[in-house]
Image 1 (tube, rainbow, N blue to C red):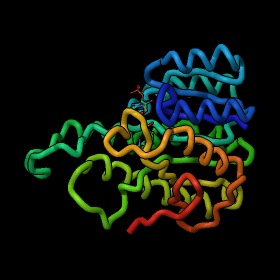
Image 2 (spheres, rainbow, N blue to C red):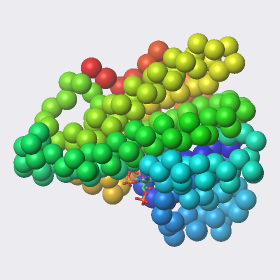
Image 3 (cartoon, rainbow, N blue to C red):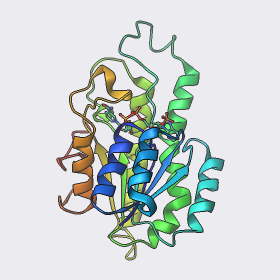
Image 4 (cartoon, rainbow, N blue to C red):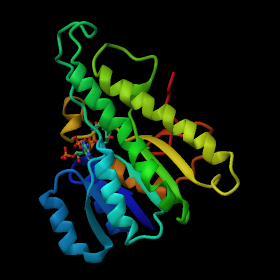
Length: 239
Ligand SMILES: NC(=O)c1ccc[n+]([C@@H]2O[C@H](COP(=O)([O-])OP(=O)(O)OC[C@H]3O[C@@H](n4cnc5c(N)ncnc54)[C@H](OP(=O)(O)O)[C@@H]3O)[C@@H](O)[C@H]2O)c1
């Protein structure tokens, strides 16, 4: 399979790239900042790894990346929207209404919600040409409505909007004969030891990377009307 991963220079994105390469796939690793880890993988895997700059928050950058990649690829089989930001901390002691950092909120939505929207708007024509097609939007358990506490407001709102967007486009894909076999998943990857996950971490990011690949490769079959799941393929609560 040919798979595009966003935010691939570190954290879960990097582990998804590493695991996909190990399994023999052709990976288009997109990133905002180059990393030594990606350079090392490039040396090891050569042509199976295509490295491409793409800032998902910036639609011009997504269009530029598409221009370069569309000249090389006729089809992409799976897109994994992984790139995201979390600017908030549990240590915030202010009033989350009046002391809200608006700039950070705007930026969070720009990356976490508009990022996947930008990527799919531009790259979907290549995915339509793919085989065994799927879209993975990495989301979070934090979208659950019955949530406690007031921390991570911008992050939770940005991912809730991503979930709703995901379900809406899934409804559209399901309603057309030629696209209804495109699988779409909203996946909570678990609380990982990454830069983002530092306040809550429980697992290493290679563990969900393996689970997510098993889902992409159809080793774990998901039969849910609302495919909001964890990396083991189990349904996640959203109310
Ligand atoms: N960590 C957790 O416990 C946890 C829990 C639930 C869900 N998640 C989700 O899992 C996914 C991966 O998170 P992580 O823990 O691996 O976080 P991370 O270590 O902070 O990595 C985030 C990645 O996103 C990239 N990124 C940020 N803004 C970008 C942009 N505008 N364009 C392109 N790339 C951008 C970062 O690149 P730079 O190096 O350039 O900043 C980095 O590669 C995210 O969707 C996150 O919301 C994580």
